[in-house]
Image (cartoon, rainbow, N blue to C red; front, side, top):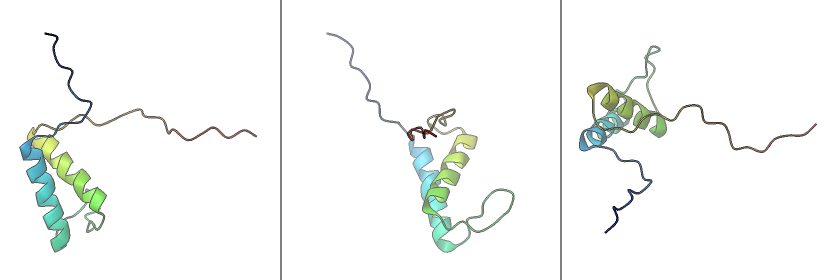
Length: 78
């Protein structure tokens, strides 16, 4: 029997989800701060990004960041 192909879904470890959960809770409490500026984070997306970043630093299973992606917007002609 042939080997099964893995699905194209991105996989995250349990430790990563715990970090994101913690970041979301801190955002809700108003204690989550962003990088150098130290401003309070209000955005849900930013809280998730911070949680994943923390998980990466701790060595949790988090897929690599996407880099060098071009925007899929159509080209404008002059």
